Image (cartoon, rainbow over all chains, first blue to last red; front, side):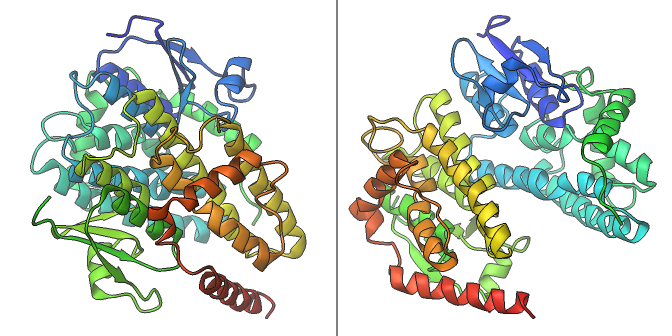
Amino acid sequence: MAKKSEIKLIGTVASPFVNRVQFVLNLKSIEYEYIEENLACKSELLLTSNPVHKKVPVLIHANKPPICESLIIIEYLDEIKPDVHRILPSDPLERADNRFWANYIDNKFFPLYEEMRVTPGKEGKDAIKKRIIEGSVLLEEAFIKFSRGKTYFGGDDVGYLDVVLGCFIAWTKFTEKNNEFKVFDEVRTPRLVEWVKRIWSHEAVKDVIPGNEVLVNFYMMLQKYRPPRAV
Amino acid sequence: MAGDKVKLLGFWGSPFALRVEWALRLKGVEYEYVEEDLSNKSPMLLQYNPLYKKVPVLVHNGKPIMESLVIIEYIDETWKNRPLLPIDPFERATSRFWAKFVDDKFVPLIIKMSSSTREQKDKVAEEAREVLKTLESSLNQNKPFYGGKILGFMDIAVAWIGIWAPMLEKIIDIKLLDEEYMPLLNTWFRDVLEVLVIKECIPPLDKLLAHYKDYYDRFMATKSN
């Protein structure tokens, strides 16, 4: 339906929020032009496309005004091309459950990684690790509920929560290595450990996931522009 | 739908429960309203919303739905009469964006305002006004409601500001909804809040003011100790 360059995605390769939009574009076989943004020096295009937040991702479809916020972009893509790889289920209650957990992941779970980065001292970091681990248990329970014994949150194939959580895998592995602990663990969250392996190798996902070098560079930039709190 | 059992767990002073009621009433859905005592939460609330233990919770035929904007979309998708969200995907994305913008940007600032010194309060109020000015810039002069002639998702998602902002202005002694700089916003809120179905479930303003003032005074007392 969408021709190449009819859809433009402004993003940055290290951003999981951009990655999740790319997963959806791939899953739905929507061709798009990707424009890499340097967040340390934001382009005129980004600043005029998203004057409100000045953030990526930003989706531009034909000559319509830009659409911002990854979850909103995903629902938009699902609505303009509903017949190819539906992302959200059609049942209203399931949709509400999916949206609830997406909000949890974005507003409560993932911010803990950044919290970990800026919190000084072992005691502070250990407290955050504990919260991340508690969150991982909630997510394991959510996976059991949504997957109903199947491979993904979405069932037989990748669905909304697979995309919403799956985009954080690279940063999860990075945070684990940096802080010497496991977010997803064979004993505590066995199903999610399996799920990570599957998502990581899914054809719509694997070429989008940033490499470690990209994450290291982005991390260094965060350390410089948003340094950790003083002890 | 006949035989539907709809319950709303709410708190009379919550703008988030209020906007869910607006959605239910616009759709003509019959519901049982259950008032929660937030200082003594019911077993029902704790059972339905174990993660956050917050209101509002909509319970539809025994199944709970949480988070007010998620609930409103659920209501819109379940009762298909009188749509709240526009039909066009781009306009839907726009409505969702501004509703999220207000929740993500304005709400935390209001909360921050009550925890600050006088100097910090003024600074936070300035940030809050900037958020409102950005919202003002999204409004169209020619439309009484966000979507046009009929109340929709954006109107009910955001109009609570037209009640809570003037109230906070009185309690904290700051300016938020500046008529001079935000004329469209002021007109928009006034128009939405005048609609009968909206107006009839707004809590009594003097009761609301007393409740929040009491909450604020007690909070400030703990801060100065």
